[in-house]
Every structure is written in C-alpha cells, then in structure tokens.
Length: 94
Image 1 (tube, rainbow, N blue to C red):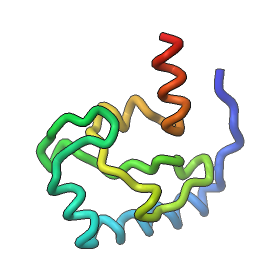
Image 2 (image 1 turned 180 degrees about the horizontal axis):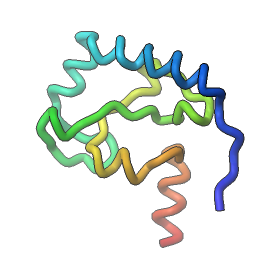
Image 3 (image 1 turned 45 degrees about the horizontal axis):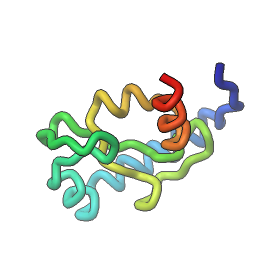
C-alpha cells in the first residue's frame, strides 16, 4: 500500500498549464517525432504517445524538460503516480 500527501489542486493546475505550453515547443515535437516510449522502448505513432512526468505532479514534480518524457499511453497509465524507481521495485517483486 502506498501513501503520500498530494500537492494542492492549484499547484497541479499551474503545472498542467506549463505542460500545455511545453507541448507546443520544438523540443517536445522533436521528442515526439522519435516515436519511442521512454519506459518500454517500443515505437508508436504520435497519437499513441503522451507526456509523462518522471516525478509526478501529485508528488511535487515540475513541468520541465528534465522531468518530462515521451510515454506510450499504456505505460503512462500503468505508472500512475509512481516514480521510476518504484516501478522497478514493483517489477522485481512481481
């Protein structure tokens, strides 16, 4: 069972607005153009990819180039509010 105190709705709204702006940048378009999921390494069409925050917004993550990666929708959905280290530990314990 996981427990953490999430960020405020105002913080998450502010960071999501920043994510919308970052998605318009040439940097993001180049990342998306590669078509590769950060987590599983498989290739996908642009429509099957999304932006994921390595440290989730709910856990204090920020919308920045160093915290945002391209993720396929299944990997992004499975990650939920975990950080990558927790995903690895979960896989090891499965």
